[in-house]
Image (cartoon, rainbow, N blue to C red; front, side, top):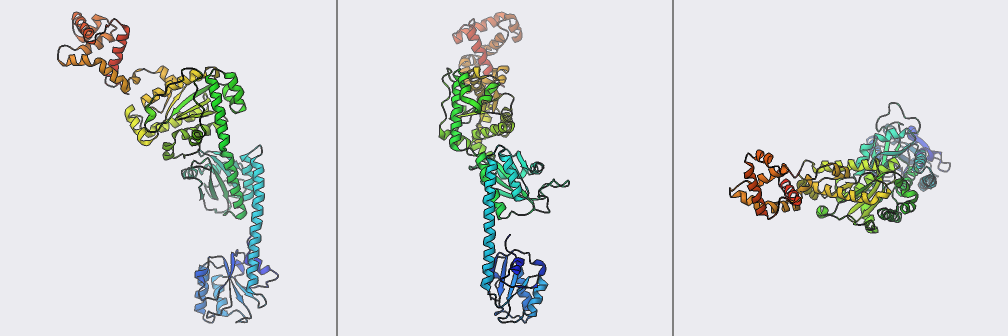
Amino acid sequence: MPPTLASLVRHPGLKLSVLAGEDRLETPVRWAHVSELADPVPYMEGGELLLITAMQIDTDDPEEMSRYVRRLVGAGVVGLGFALGVHYTEVPPALATAAKEEGLPLLGVPRRTPFIAISKAVSAAIAADQYRAVTAGFEAQRELTRAAIGAEGPAALLARLAAHVDGWAALYDASGAVVAAAPDWAARRAARLTADVERLRSRPGPASVVVGGGRGTAGATGAEPAGDTAVADRVELQSLGTGRRTRGVLAVGTAAPLGTAERYAVHSAVALLTLTTERSRALQEAEQRLGAAVLRMLLAGEPDHARAVAGRLYGGLLDAPFRMLLAEAPSGGAAQQAHAAPAAANEAPAEPSAETATTTTSTGSCTDEAEAADPLGTLIDTMEEAAARSGESVLVVPDGERLIVLAPDGGAAVAACAEHAQAVEARRGTKARPRARAVVAARRGDELVIGLSAPTGPIAAAAAYRQAEQALSVARRRGRTLVEHEQVAAGSVLPLLADDAVRAFADGMLRALHEHDATGRGDLVASLRAWLSRHGQWDAAAADLGVHRHTLRYRMRRVEEILGRSLDDPDVRMELWLALKATAPGTSV
């Protein structure tokens, strides 16, 4: 505890007497200051015990004394020490009356007690209090460290922290969900602060905010009051993480502002929790290299070796069906460029460099701006956070402008990926045409496209990679954020004809027929479409056109002459049909 007026009165060497303000002696004293100025207020900071001999003030004027004391109280002076036996044998009545009226504690200082003795006593008490706080803080740090490295990890740390601050503590992950709390009832209270946590996470770290007002004792330890409101206590929220992206948030609830010792404990907890939520760069790079090695072995058809290398880190992932995910977010509009899949199993993606791994996973925030700047990093965080909450293992391999992920089929990580893709598409505007969606994505910078394979196992990882590659290509062409391979297999090939290269091929193939029809010498394009749609049945196609079958036969011979190709060739019929479909209205959906 810091020194108080009461502790100074009880000090055996000072011999102070209480002349007014007996009910306010428990007020803390920040310093003892000597001033004989008629108006010492400009030199006060608040919390001082002011020591005077009354050399420069008119102590016989009640109005002057009243103004003098009111200014001291307004400046935050907590007490007035008056020297007895120097200029006055007793405290002047006007000063004593003014002190009683304003409630300012008035202490009598005997002649044998020099002011310097009082200043030394206050300084020594402050130093002793600070020493006790630092000692308690170091002890709290040791206890918190032991708890953090124990089997229970953050849960034990929060329990120790709650005991040190005589309140409660809670830990939120990067998504804003409560992952641990102490005591147990604090989880319900912490869940009510998710909006405040979200606002804190939107700020660049490190950041902190205080919510609530510390009214009453709702924040004290013990059972949660039945009528508890959202923030009846005082809650400090501290962001966790060393980069711009917040990795978590610590909440500490107390009935009153934190003291020095409690502040040391909270700072220690923030540092320890940051260490547990922020893996070291070397460890992160090692895990990514291990993941890249496991992926190469899987794509090379060596699942047994992959399991041996994965060990306990990824081993459980390979014991059940998983999905392979390819994500791409190149800059400068490169999202529209195709990437060829490995032609053979040994053409696995190159192992990511340390620089790539660092920039992909350690920057950004959960805000739209940060996501636009680092969409792959946001996707990684989203999937890893979901996997961590459900106890899943995910294998993440950054590969240049791409991201390769192995995640359990039907698990939380895949579900989180789908939800994230829906949110991205909602911002882009999914009702726009593919070309328009691509323009929106390029303008925002969030050119994220994702391809997801069908469920598979380690022995078919190479096939899963090709499936994810095909789904990624379809997503890029359709202007979609996420396409699953099942959708490609069950869907139609016609949406793929919206590609500019396919349209150019179709226009070139049909140009001569359109030029012929423009002269008014016959409707060859419509006739060709009707004939192909009827699989070459003359009577049915002629009936659709309302012409004689001999007229239709003549038109098809003209088509062959103009194109220089035979309609008996199935490849020619296929190419002409696709060209007609590619140039038909409504193809680019």
